[in-house]
Image 1 (tube, rainbow, N blue to C red):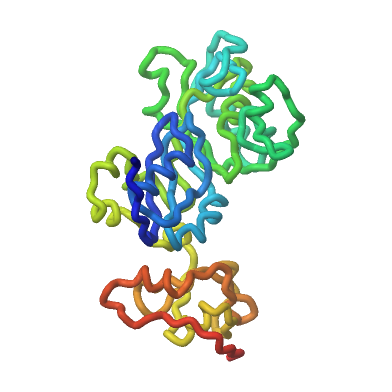
Image 2: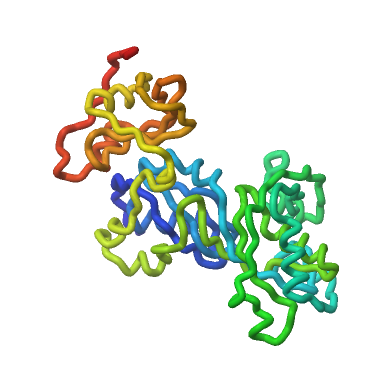
Length: 330
């Protein structure tokens, strides 16, 4: 009989290095079990055929997972030129093979054509849903449905010299690129489009996410390394609950102001307008939530509960953060 896990309140962000072949949800469930966490979520799906950064949110941090989902992403992608497949990646069947004669300058010029705002047609082998069913289910049934182009932004494409695979294997048919892009960008489609522009075709043979918003792979852990640790060691790896918004401006309130903010009460403050701020109580780790400042008023956007705030405090910070229903216009 399987032993029942005694769940506990865990708050923070884990930088997971997702392995090849595992879905994002399966990786999340494995990490949640290791942490015995009551509540957990991830910040955007990473395909099973991709590896790399998958930030996982526990407890209070799950309230900000959408911010991670909306953040820009960074990838290291490896393109195989001269071959097209049915899925634009290594999982599909080969459709066509073409002889490749591509110089670095030609490849770089092709990549440069995709920098900026572009329109992408979502691939049939994707999780995008149509009538409640993911597109890949239609594709597996041999059905192709019409897809509307989507606007995405490619901020930059760099060709790391040490990652030009042709330097190692004596050919010019395999290249690596570092891509920084907006959410919703299909790197498989980008690889296919680059190959089409070069006239030889291409597919994505490897993909690794290296960044999500302000977070990178630095300090990321594998599921195997987590499993080998004690619970105390795993807890020490968690980033603060506000890590996903660490680059937002800070507003700090006294105890009275913190209580009113947690009640959703607007507060007048001599601060300039700001579309998004992170808000704290007087204690160093008393993260209260997010908000914005409009016309001199601090307005809450996403709030932690007083219990969650208390769970973030150092043991020495014993004064409780109290909720209050008192309304103030000053």
